Image (cartoon, rainbow, N blue to C red; front, side, top):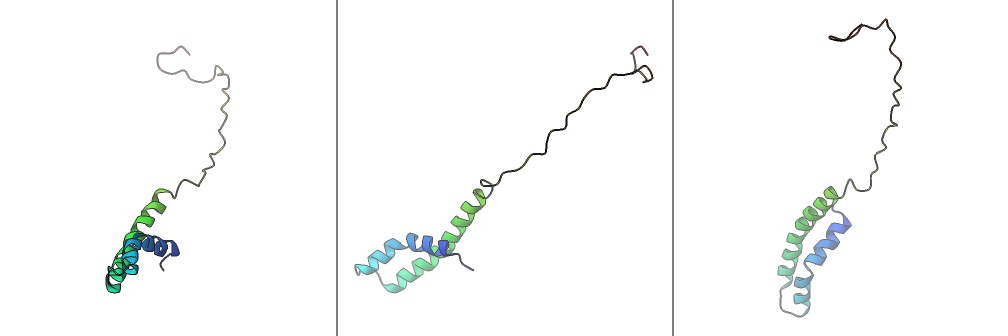
Length: 85
């Protein structure tokens, strides 16, 4: 399904050809061909714009930070290598 924004953008792209048709400088078939070429071009450009701007409205909630409290080391823990026990 073609989005209305694509058709509107394609109409905007092919507006110079439509104007030339109004002032009788261009045939209607040339105007329609230019519009039909403008539709996939507009669809690709708007899809690229939607892809680039897709993540801007989203906010990611970060999980709460975990608070680590050091506990005193008692004498029953084994000391590491080179350390007195």
